[in-house]
Length: 238
Image 1 (spheres, one colour):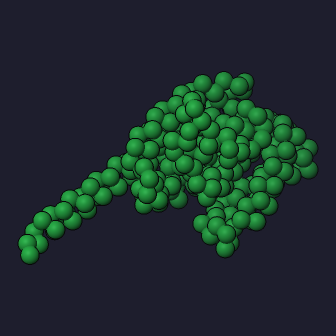
Image 2 (cartoon, rainbow, N blue to C red; image 1 turned 60 degrees about the vertical axis):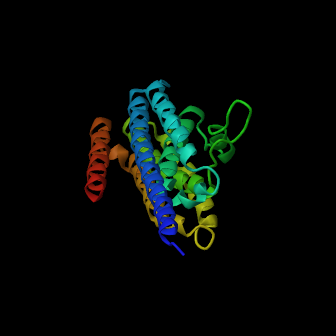
Image 3 (tube, one colour; image 1 turned 90 degrees about the horizontal axis):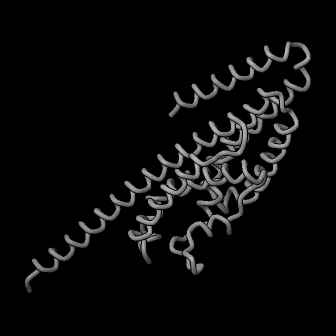
């Protein structure tokens, strides 16, 4: 028996697998990078005031084009075969979309609304969104919401910041339900989620209880400095 054709075919299959995996990883990295730019654009727009999120929505459109390319590579069983290779991109995208949705509607985006982004005009799902990717993306979104809340406090809007704090607490309760044996990956993010809640709580407390001890302009600068040091420490860890 000639075994050369067998090994030749095996080599071709493995080469095709590795090539496809590299393309999936590259697309996921591009999606992650564009999603981060989308989040930065949302923060800039929110800090300017108003509801002009056109720059972020343009980034979202570019990201959807990348997902279209990804969907070609993960048809059928390949979706689950390469899911770990593109899960990070999904989580970053959901983080950005959830932040945009909150800024526009002041509430949490639903999984069904994420699914609609990946449906054609006839309602056919051209790319599936796993429940775990949605939940992990929402957990990441809380970090951006914390930064948004800190900025709002520096403007003196205590009530809105307290509302965000309550919103974060509710997400924490919901995440606790599915963490552990149901979704172990979420445990790694729970520490950051609780840290975000604590930062907003301390800022709200300081502004409401101790704010009267300082001139308003001085206290807002103190909050800005604290947030700036936090951002620098986080970038250093990355």
